Length: 89
Image (cartoon, rainbow, N blue to C red):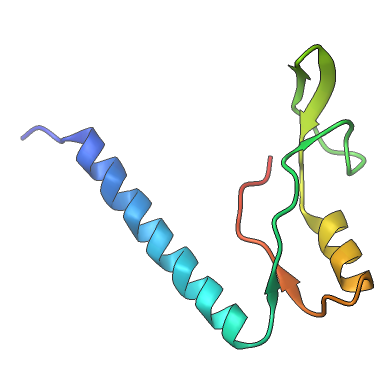
């Protein structure tokens, strides 16, 4: 029996999306604020971890390792309780 990998990937993606949406709705219902931090940065944001470096339009860059710094800045800016659903590298 052959497996249609495209269909399997689509089903998995839909399941993850559904879970993310439910998670988002619960947190928003509890008064959290959703933020969206940059994923491309000029330098490493956390020490001691491996960094994925890249060339971005002739300039050095790296993928963000964590949204923690941006979450802390949002809290300090009186956003209250914050969350982010997204990739980390």
